[in-house]
Amino acid sequence: MKEIKRDLYLNKLINRKENNLIKIITGIRRSGKSYLLDPIYKNYLLNEGVKKDHIIKIDLDLRKNKQFLDPDYLDNYIRDSIKDNDTYYILLDEIQKVEDFESVLNGFLKIPNLDVYVTGSNSKFLSSDIITEFRGRGDEIRIYPLTFSEYISAYDGTKEEAWKSYITYGGLPLILNQKSDEQKRNYLISLFNTTYLKDIIERNNINRTDVLDSLINILASSIGSLTNPKKISDTFTSSSIKDVSINTINSYLNNLLDAFMIEKVERYDVKGKKYITTPSKYYFADIGLRNARVNFRQVEENHIMENIIYNELLTRGYCVDVGVVETRKDNVRKQLEVDFVCNESYKRYYIQVALNLETREKTLQEEQSLLNIDDNFKKIIVVKDNINHWITEEGILVIGLQEFLLNKNSLDL
Image (cartoon, rainbow, N blue to C red; front, side, top):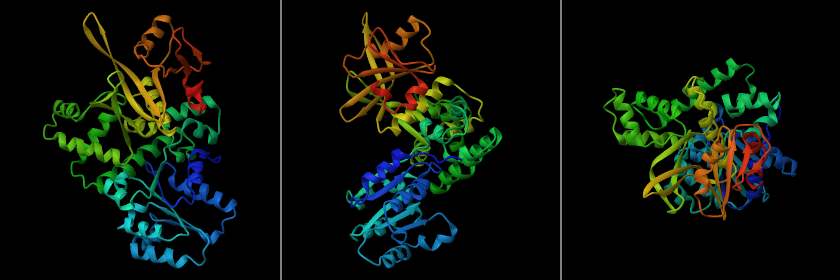
């Protein structure tokens, strides 16, 4: 397998180097957090002239390192490893496995020549209580499964073959090691059941595994659809599962969010400039995991496109909402949806997703919600077709999906 380029995250680490904060790398399991620390960042440090014995890397999920799960042992080991006043780089993988790790890390912050990097596979250890413990001295770096640009950099084949593989099997890095379609399918199905699901059940002491299982199936079958705990509860009831409370559903949704398996997207009233608390949309952190959950049967291209575009926007650092635009005609109110409202600092983009714009009528239909927004921020339609980008008569950018994904400046064309 070719080397996977993850320059976006490497540069984030480089920009935070020796900033007197604990660098906290989070993300779904198997998304490449460990690989980012070692070999990518470790090799960078070595190439910059850092001595090998000044880089201390401990994989806390390996059995051979179980003694480090004792916070006192870990603390003493790191302190005893400091032999001079030069900077030591501490790379701790899966830090949440260490009991009372907050106090250990806070202790490291008081040692002036330590630069600390940790990874974790769930958001439990980033709760408000723990952030308070760090007293503003934690710096989170969220890592996502491979974007299509990263995927294609290591894929052995044509761009068309890479795209077909990507939309089917997703961007978990180890997918690139699997040779056949059968191996890829089996890898994802096994990973979902024996790693992700098992981890969520054990960590949260879930008793109703049947409910969790059904909930995941519901979400996987309806990515990009508006829903809420009440609507999901009604789905359970219609399926003759009547003893599931809305609180249980809400709790299990939060468990899935904590594990970074899914993302919740709020609705934003563009004209009213306010959030609509319910219903919301849910997308999967990796489209391959979603496809594995439905046994690679349900392939709704439009929703899969939405999921991939949403993940791409998160990777690029945008805050993403679903837009709602209210219109009035003949005293009749109508709500139009904008697939994504993306914000970064003073920038904003409105994005609509469409399979194609084959006719003028289809173009006007997809433009409708965008044309009812009365500000001057950029408006974009992303289509499935591999086309050269162009501008509609109304001034809206139309861009093909692959160009959107492969050009990091595609929003500013």
